[in-house]
Every structure is written in structure tokens, then in C-alpha cells.
Length: 264
Image 1 (cartoon, rainbow, N blue to C red):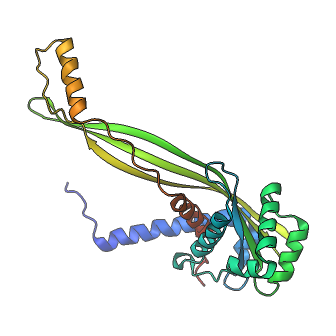
Image 2 (image 1 turned 90 degrees about the horizontal axis):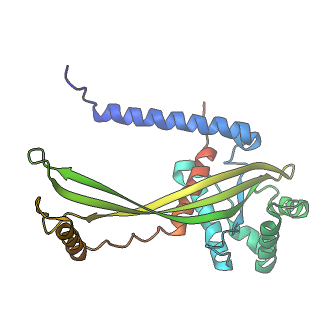
Image 3 (image 1 turned 90 degrees about the vertical axis):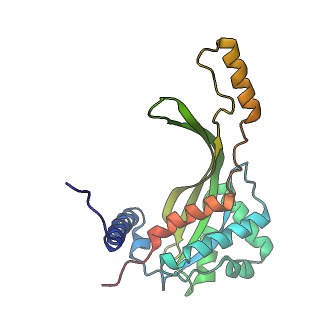
């Protein structure tokens, strides 16, 4: 029997079906974990961005970083792929509170790990009629992992290795905790952990420049290997991806849950 050939249209339909199934799973999970968010019309009952802080020592928690992270989370939640949700940007809250009081609020959030009742009451008065939900983010962990693997190509006739390639990979993994508060009752609506991951990789040709002789002894073989290593020394691992890349992935993963369902 011949192999089935999938047309481009059929492949696109399969991809769309998989995306739809994934979207349904996300909506079902959101309905279980955060029913208020799942039932809300986020085009009208908007989300306001409070800010993002960091508990990860490797990342730090500077004022400049906080401001860029807050813009990043708002930009990603409001992306076209998530229905262009009309997010209330962090600048509005910062303008009302003033820069100093705004960062004191974030300091308090970082210290407690949550938003206290007094702050929620104030946010309710600030965003009344403008937004129903307010979101805080916290970077809990940021780590870099390095790995490598080797592959070989063997000649079918001679059974000799004709080439060897080493693949070196540097992965960055960032864990983010997102908390949504419902300002209508000033209660926690969703407490969600997500991991953003990204990697850089590169291939290094490890094929021997000097071929080994099948009759060479241990010492000669060792010297040949040392010579090959000197000719093609192991490279350094590629640089780790930028933190913002991992945060973008984490925020996109959360945004997928908020994507409005199709109107019936």
C-alpha cells in the first residue's frame, strides 16, 4: 500500500482542530480554577495591570525592571491572538498613585506575597467602572541549564564513522506566579503558576581531522585524539536566552487561558 499524502488544506485543518481542542482544555481548566474569570466578558470587565516583582536572586528587582515587566505583561495579554483584550495599562495606576506610592505598593506585595485588603479596597475605588480584575506577577525562580548531545553518521559499507556532531544547548527556565484579584468582591480570583522556557543551541563538527589507524596502539590513538581535540576544540555553550523571552512565553501561556470564546 502506498503512503497517504496529506494535502496542505488537510494539514491546516488538523492543526486548527488541535488548537481548538487545546483551547477547550484551557477554558475548562480556567472554569475550574477561576470561574469568575471564565464567565466574565473581558472585553468589558477589563483587566488592569498592577505590576510584576521578583523574588529570584539571579534577576533582581529594580525599579526599571519592574516597569518594563509590567508593560510586557500588558502587551502580551492584549495581543491579537488573545482577542485584543482591552487591558488597562499599568501607567494609569502609577499616575493615580504616584510613582513612589506605586512602588511602595509593589514592595508590600512582594513582602506579603499577596495583595492585602486595604490595597484591594483602594484599587477598587481607582478602577471602578474601568476594570473588574487586577493582576500582579511575581518571578519566583530563574535558572539556566546546559546540556549537550552527540550524533554520528556511519558509512553503510565500511561501517566507519564518517562524521560526528555535538549539539550544545543552553536553556533558560523562568517560573512566574500570576494572581488575579476580582475587584467586584475584592477577593483572589486566580492563583496560577506557569513556567516560561526558551533555549539557544548550536552544532559543533567533531569529525576527526586526523583519521585513526586501525592498527595503532593505545598511546598512538590517545595522541591522535589529543591532536584532533586541539584542531577542533570544544566550543563554549551558546549564551542563555534573554529573561524577557522566557517571561513572554510565560505571559503568552497565561493569555491563552483568557482568550475569549467564540460567540454562539
